Image (cartoon, rainbow, N blue to C red):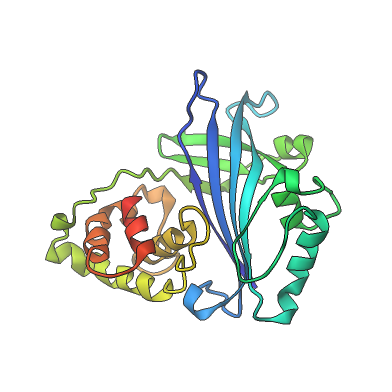
Amino acid sequence: MSEFDTRRYDRCYGEKGDNCTYELDRTYYVGDPECVPNESDVLYKLNLHGQVNYWGENAAMPGSYKASMHWTGATLFVNGDKPTFNYVLSDLKDCCPNVTWTTDKWITVTEKDCNGVDPSGSQVCNTVSGSTDYFNYKWIDDMHYVTSRDDFEKLSGWNNPIDENYLREKIEQSGNQNPEDCTTLLWNECGKAIQQAETNCKSCGEDGGGDSNLECEGCLFRELNPMEGPNRWDPRSQTNRWHKCCPCVNEYADNIDRNWLNHAANHC
């Protein structure tokens, strides 16, 4: 079994800039360690929404800052093809009795539908029941930051040290979306990865799950910026092909009937 997350932080609004929201798409795959949607069985899919709060500098770790994420709602899809997957549904029925649970259908749940957070409960139950996740972060430059390991206990989470290996790149949705700028030279660099993403993710987002098909955007990003090979994504390099290839993503999306790819193109 393997897991893949794709996350989006929305911009903060409000007088103090404290109305910050967050979306996470998490898919648990079975049968393929590479997490390729078209070659894997899906155990379950989880699309989460939550509130992000920033609590200022951590006095115990000067230069780092405290943050928390509180989950406020979710949609879930549990695969009913294999009886061995039913334990996920059993857990959800126990912790969220106000929901009519079934397989092979997207189900919406909010924290009021559930019994609340139980430290001894399963991760999926605590997540959809309104748990809060605590961590520290530190900016390296305008586009990069590092974080600590997160924790559902406040004191533990805010005392976890920054781990320089948890390096993140801030990826703005600001690429060139004009398909006319997809030159032959740019397609030669980007086209194979875009076509591979379309092949790998044919099973992605076609069932209408989630609010924004983040799973599929993550699939596209992985092909454009793989973890290995000559085009390997390295956040330290301050370069990635997500924005560079945007014109060709849009050009390809204009000529193929894939709703998720059109959506991903709009978020380049």
